[in-house]
Image 1 (cartoon, one colour):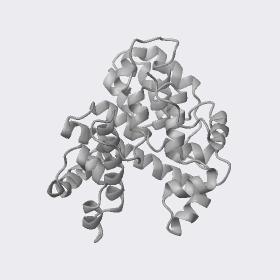
Image 2 (image 1 turned 180 degrees about the horizontal axis):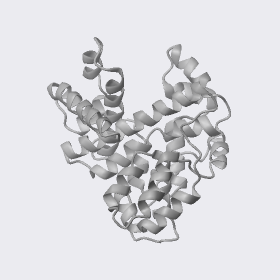
Image 3 (image 1 turned 180 degrees about the vertical axis):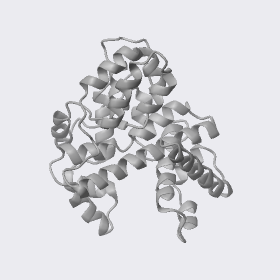
Length: 290
């Protein structure tokens, strides 16, 4: 049974969705995919790795693989699986038709910096989510990576298609508002709602859709509660990786959302080591230009 859409009564969200006709991808990813998909020596895992650093391309790839055209008996949930199913020829065609508009490039330097920061955070969160999924064996690591990669895509879509400038959100956040509150005040909807609504519109698997609801507390036993917990913890650990260890870090670690640590059965004394290991996984991936 399909989950009820979360955006039915939100006019602002409907207006934004009507503008989202396609997903943009990073130009260098498009060019690399076209190059690699034309080689007989390229492996599925190689091209999947290139695609997996781009939330826009990854989302478009999953949307295509899960489209009614193919009528698969089950939903495709990972980048690697989608590449294997679609094949290099279809991937190459997709790369050439989705366009090369850079979702993370703004109209000015300030916009570009903000969107690039979201991209870096998305990739770091994906790496950390995959690490946590492997560590706790709670969900498929590839599914966790995918959900971590696209969990902030709603911010980019608000910035591109929203009715106002995202700087207004940042101004409210500087005065103490949380990002969801500030986004709702400016756009009448927030990035989590946008991500979930778009994922539903694009036909993503329900498990990924539920995972994108990462800021809503879940109870043990709820469908895909482990994935939601992993995405939330990955988001927080990625924040720490960007800021580095500060005097406040230990206190922040001790106040990680209790619902997420409870679902994953993480004891308080395990949290500092988990944070260190997650940050190490992010640093290692960054050193490999991921």
